[in-house]
Length: 605
Image 1: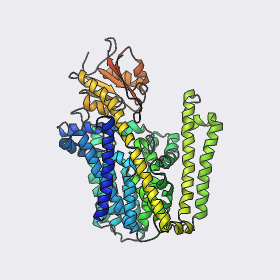
Image 2 (image 1 turned 60 degrees about the vertical axis):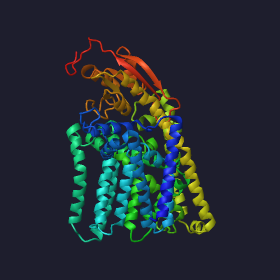
Image 3 (image 1 turned 45 degrees about the horizontal axis):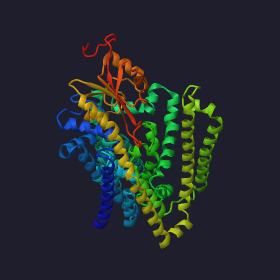
Image 4 (image 1 turned 120 degrees about the horizontal axis):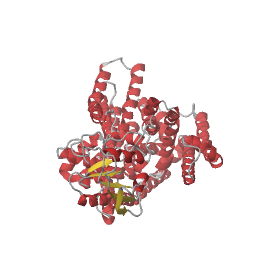
C-alpha cells in the first residue's frame, strides 16, 4: 500500500472518530453505546485485578462470547482504564480491517485506485465507526478475519506459510466472534476441492492446519465445559434459546428444524440487504453486480473469488441457521461488521471494475429467479394482508388466539420481509445489468465514472457524519438509564448484597454488588425453561436466591414487576428519546422477603 493511500485512509478515519467522540461530549459524558460493552469491562477488570475470568469476582464463568477481546481488554484496562482502553483498542483493530480490505481488493483487481476507493468507502460505512468505538469486539474480529482472508488469497499452495497463517488468524477470529468459524469452514471446503481436483495429495498440510485450529480453540471449549457444563458459553443458550439447528435436531422438533433451515436464513438474508441500504444505498444496490463478478470471472484466483462471493452471500443466512438471535442488522450490524468492508468491495467492483461476469449460460435462469423473488415478496405481503388470520398462527408457531395488539406488529414484520425478498430479486436484476456491454461502455467514460465515484463518497460521508448523533445518543441512553441506576445502587451497597437485573453490564461494573442475571448470560442457575419466564425465575429466587434488590425494565419482566408484595419500588429512571435501549425505563426495587416464604439459600434465614 502506498504511504499516500495509507495516510489519507487513516486521516479520514481519525477525523470521523474524533467527530463521533466530540459529538458525544456535547450531549453526555464519555462511555459506550451498549450495555454489553460494560459486560466485557467487568470481565476485563476482574482478570486485570486477579479475580480470574469471572463476572462476579472469583466465580469463573464462560459468559463472554468473545474471550479474545475480553483478554485484550484486560491489558487495555490496566493501561488506559475502561473507556479509553476499550475505544482505542477497537479503533486500532478496525483500522487494520480497512488496510486488509485494501490489500484484498488489490490482489483481486490488481488496481490500486479500486483498492483505495474500497477502503475509503469502508471507512464511510458508519457502522464500522460505531463498532470501532463501541467497546465491543467488532474491530478485533473484523481486523483479524480480514487479514486472515488476505493471507489466504496470498497463499499459492496448500503448504504455503501464508495458508497456515490464514487458518491461525481465522481461528483467532473465532475466539473474537464465534460466527467467524465460517471463515474456517469456507476456506477448508475450497482447499479440499482444490486438493482433490488439482493439487498433490499431501496430508501433512491438512494435519498442520487441523492442529493449528485445535490448539487455538480447544482451551475455549474446555473452559466452557468446566464452568457451565456445556461446550458453548452461557450467552449462546441465553440468546438463541434452542432455536438453532443443532438444538432443534437434538430436541427432535421438526417445526424448529424447518425454521432453522428455511425461514431464519431467508429472513436474515433479506434483512441484511434491506437494512444495508441505510449504509450507502448506491453501493448496496450495485453490490450484487460485484458478487457476480467474483463468482463468474476467470483468472488464477477463480476458486478463491468464488469462495469469497459465496462466503458473503451465505454467511448471514448461516447465522440464521446456527445462531438465530434477532436479525442481521441488530445493533448496527455488530454481529457481522467484518462483512461490511467486503460489501464496500463488491459495490466498488460492481460499478467500476472493467471485468464482466460471464452470465451467458445463466442469464435466463437468473432472470427467472430474480422475477420469482420479486413476485414471492409481493405475494407474501398479499397473502398476509388478506389471509393473515389463517396464516399467522402457523408461521409464528403461536396458538390460534393472538392478542389484538400483536397483529399490527406481526404484519409490519411480514410486510418488511416481503419487501426485502423482492429487493434481493431487484438487486439480482441490477447486477445482471451492471455486467452488460452497454453499462461498461457508459461507466468507462471519464465523466460518468468520476460522477459516480463522487456521489458514492459524498453519500457515504453524509450518512456517516449524520450518524455521529446516533452514536452519541446511544451512549447518552446507556449513561442516563443503566449507569445512573447502577451508581444509585452502588451508593446503597453493603457487603454481601445481591441485585437481580436483566441488563447486567453497567450494574456489574458500578453497583458494587453481586449480580444475579435474569437473562442467564453469566450464571448457571437458570434453566432454558426459566429463561423468558420470570414467574419461574421468581419461584427459584424465593427458594434459593433471595436477592436484596431488583433493577429491571418492567415490561421485560412483567411478572416480577407486578410482585410488589415482595419488591418495593424505590426509584424510576427514564432515558428520554431512546435510541438503543430495549426499554427506556429501569425501576429499582428493594426486596422484602417475608419469613413465611420457603427459603434455603446458603443457610440464610
